[in-house]
Image (cartoon, rainbow, N blue to C red; front, top):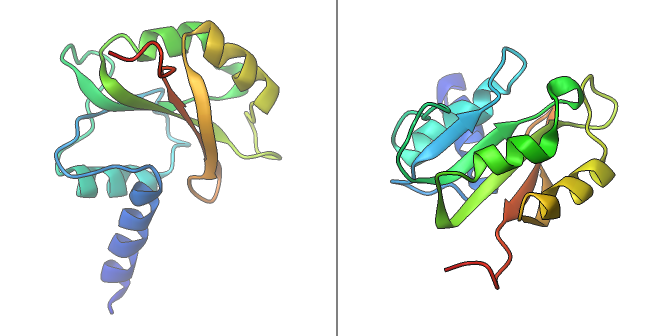
Length: 143
């Protein structure tokens, strides 16, 4: 396998951890130059389309919310993130891993998610520097 093929496989593997599937519309919020390029490229490759930004106004299947400790009020960001999320949609809250600049304590996520109307279902290592917390609407609230 060539280095390019190896990299493409790594990218697809990262996206598969997030449960991204072909045809999904994925919105990205909080992008900055510290975001993981391989994870982003993998999501685009698997979904089959470019990521949409926070100006997008149609329904999305998945939201990738890149969030750092200094980014402001997490509850407000989560409420904004679910505005156009499909009924069975998922928010992946991507935060720097412990020990990295901008790390968000799990207690902050645990407090913010239910206030925003979400519940945490799992946390994964999304990439070398980022962890992902999967947030969904509680079953009783889903339509």
